[in-house]
Amino acid sequence: MKVKATVEELLAKAEQPSKDALRLHPFYRGKIQVTLKCRIKSFDDFAIWYTPGVAAPCKEIAKDREKVFDYTNKGNTIAVVTDGSRILGLGDIGPEAGLPVMEGKALLYKYLGGVDAFPICLATKDPNEFIQAVKWLQPSFGGINLEDIEHPKCFYILETLRRECEIPVWHDDQQGTACVTLAGLINAVKIVGKKLEDIKVALIGAGAANVAIARLIIAAGVNPGNIVVVDSRGILHKDRGDRETLQTKYKEKWELCLKTNAEGIKGDIPEAMRGADVLIAASKPGPGTIKKEWVASMAKDAIVFAEANPVPEIWPWEAKEAGARIVATGRSDFPNQINNSLGFPGIFRGALDIRATTITDEMCIAAAQELAKVAEDKGIHEEYIIPTMDEWEVFPREAVAVGTKGIEQGVARVKLPAEVRYKMAEETIRKAREQVQFLMKENFIVDPDES
Image (cartoon, rainbow, N blue to C red; front, side):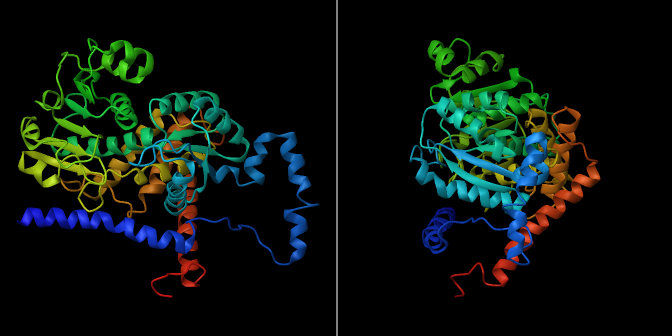
């Protein structure tokens, strides 16, 4: 009865944010607005910020395009772009219905990373039209955050834009999830006394998140042959009956068929998990997607990442009862939350501060390593393998790590010392948070519960 009551309480708690959202979104009519960052002492200042004075910086930029970073806010502005085809767990609900999510992403960028982000919801499902639209947006933005795009086209869109754009393009459902998952994994294997290059990993789900996780953990040192991936039709291997479909429509999955599963294991989730050191599930919400007996079949000191929301594939206490030593989920009310918000604000802060032309996988790994180090510096243990969002030093430290790696790789337009970049990031993030607190204190942002 105690477990049943706990489950009911957790489900009720999970529903509360939705109730609050329906009350507060119409109250504020959204979550973001455009405000000013320059002085206006009198109406005479309009002659500086607009005509005739504004013609002078325009002429300078016309002579040297790179000066756009000096004379405008381009260097601190990104677009959060979606077509509405895979919004959270809601599916293809359209660009208008996706706008609250994109505004929310912009809110997190500003408050956590001091990044000015603007939502762009495109009324097209054609990937080539999407790509062209993003390329047309480049003059106004310092970076692009792709969000909530169905697969497999999300892979094609990201790959093409990363190759053809002059500014960083990032898909948080791929790179963000992979980065934060890797950070948690780095510390988890330390705690259980294992090494990345030796562990056997079962990846349950083969959507955007796990395909990117596979790529990033391999780049970080995990042996691809020790990874077994499961999609809705079973374990990926090179002899799959649907290999022709995979080769033509799902090339990322087919590459995993060729690269992973060196033992040629066949079957489904139970076979993939048997003897595995690590389970990373990014599949359909539970409970019951992952069963206790499957966890019990894993190696000693097993690590379980059940990342589905709002309900993980298996409840943490069930995984623990089955023998897992470390359990992480996507929820904030359990220890070890694998939360993308730990990644993208700091990563883009670092990329923007060096005026990066791209965000490489190595920059993502550097971010993951720094995330892991922040937690390690405070003392990692089974219920603390990764920092939480309220540990604000995560974001400037992550920004510096990303920027340093970008400079090393030659993708930076400016090369400032690490200590200068840390101070810049810290000050920008501090100002963003203090601005919100000031607006609340002065009642420019009204609290409906106190009005």
